[in-house]
Image (cartoon, rainbow, N blue to C red; front, side, top):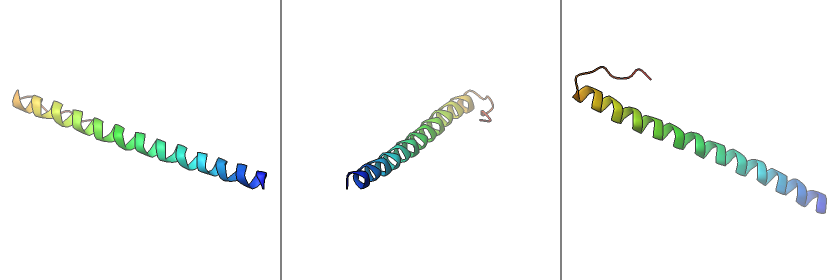
Length: 53
């Protein structure tokens, strides 16, 4: 019984770690997009080229 419980906890830990990694990747992507848009808008307002990143 204890071995099954430990196996269950290890599986939950793996799932939680995967969810955390997915959320971090999504947040990073959204932040990068927002910053890129702000920079591009400012450059366009000054008549400069957009960033290619």
